[in-house]
Length: 300
Ligand code: C2E
Ligand code: MG
Ligand code: MG
Ligand code: MG
Image 1 (cartoon, rainbow, N blue to C red):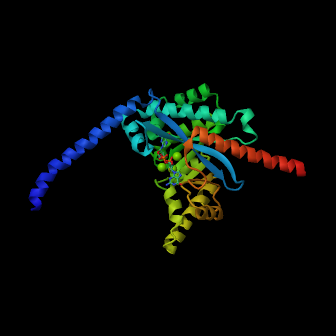
Image 2 (image 1 turned 90 degrees about the horizontal axis):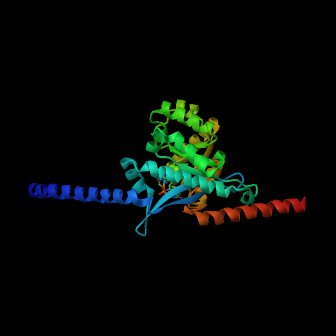
Image 3 (image 1 turned 120 degrees about the horizontal axis):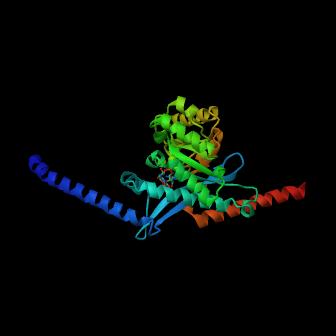
């Protein structure tokens, strides 16, 4: 009967939990060594400025090569957060991204087309006491121009103790860094704080972009368009640039152009790739920019 099965499954359930927490512990142990073993790597995903059709920047997305396999940050960032490992890992990410931004904006590579590198911050990293100092250290050591670095904070992290966040954001802005709210629309924003935060950009979460292409349901699609339009209007009223995440199809891109979105990021324009590949993308972009510029000079 159900009773008997129920009795047995209690044991099964707890041993399953045990296996899960062992796997988690195992991952934590390995993660502890990931930095010294140089198993972490930043991938870069390009962002497209819609009005100009040009590359505007890259978002740095961390990857962990754990015994030959790529582990998604969605799986290990939470463990890094709970264990406190996010602090050294976050410092490494910041400095690595700053060095890359510095290299990609060197005067001889620049060709009139600067790029920003966006870095994700976790809540725990953002709230540690020495946070501002570690940012200062990354900026100083890498000698990057701070205007080439953008920090991304998720909406839910930003709205958690927003008075403290406001102070931190003001200091970061004072250092010349650009600031973006990530996963916008998935948390609960206080409009009062959204207005007071010294931000540059809103990133519309990819769940809204996905809803735009509901070919099966015209009403759902219209709803999605209305919501995205409202988010873009809100962003523009607050003097922010609005970028949509997770754009996979041309149809979504055209809808976003129609809705007045400023930029897109997603598999359509480019997947997250290792730094060498991102650099090739950047060079091609700069060459075609140069070619266009020369053509204008010649014809003028
Ligand atoms: P996020 O910052 O919102 O990053 C966007 C995620 O969407 C990335 O997943 C990216 O690979 C994925 N993505 C981009 N374009 C598309 C698309 O067209 N379709 C679909 N389906 N997905 C797309 P990823 O790299 O797995 O990262 C997941 C999350 O992990 C990030 O979300 C961010 O919250 C966190 N994360 C990633 N790198 C870091 C990091 O360096 N530090 C911290 N603290 N968190 C990070
Ligand atoms: Mg992000
Ligand atoms: Mg996001
Ligand atoms: Mg996300």
